[in-house]
Amino acid sequence: MRTNDQDDEPERGAARDADAVQVLHRQALILDCFSRGQPRLRASDVRAATDLPATTVARILRSLVQENLLARTGDFYSIGLRVMAWSAAATAGSDLIEAAKPVVTELRDRTGESSIVYVRQGGSRVAVLISHSEQSIIYQGRVGQIQPLNAGGAGKVFMAYDPEALRAALDAGLTAYTTNTIVSRERLEDDLRETRSRGWAYAPEERERGLSSMAAPVTDAHGTLVGALAIGAPTFRLSLESAARHAPTLVDCAKAISQQLL
Image (cartoon, rainbow, N blue to C red):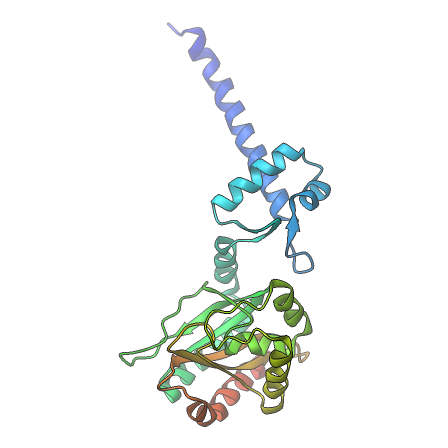
């Protein structure tokens, strides 16, 4: 014999499912507010864009931050590391990654150092392809890793060749990660001019002591910057003099990827 509670269970289950779908819909609605043109938003901006009640927006923003789907800095929210990692995985099927795969391995073999392809996401850069050095002491990264624009060779490439990237980095603030990180806008612009002049960037221990990097631009058929090809290594193997020796190989490999995108 069925009880009234048993009779009501399908209706309660359907109601729970409907509630879950509504929550997911509202979360997606809020995440959709963030874009390349609007990477950082206040709660009030999200309320205005979604027409959701203030209490609902506050609750969902709190939940998204807890899950690393959004990051909060002061009053501003931006896309979180978890979404960046998903984006990197989605990018793995792109023309850039397919074109870069054999070249990144070649660069690793010719230089003996870890080779990485980065793409830009707002004020950050994301590693989308890595071929690690086979030496015992190496730069160790991972696909989906989020790093700042203002510290590192790849970040300098984005800032040097993409004015929007430079604006994003300046808006985010030139944070010092080591004593070598450039935190002066004037010094940074001088460094970026030098990067454009020689066609590659060098960053000596700007993000982490003991590690240095260099990078060159990768462009598409329209000449638009789409990525940065980088080498990361311990500083004792990647001094400025060593970087200068690797530069022709690095630039040739970046051009080879660009050629595949024509």
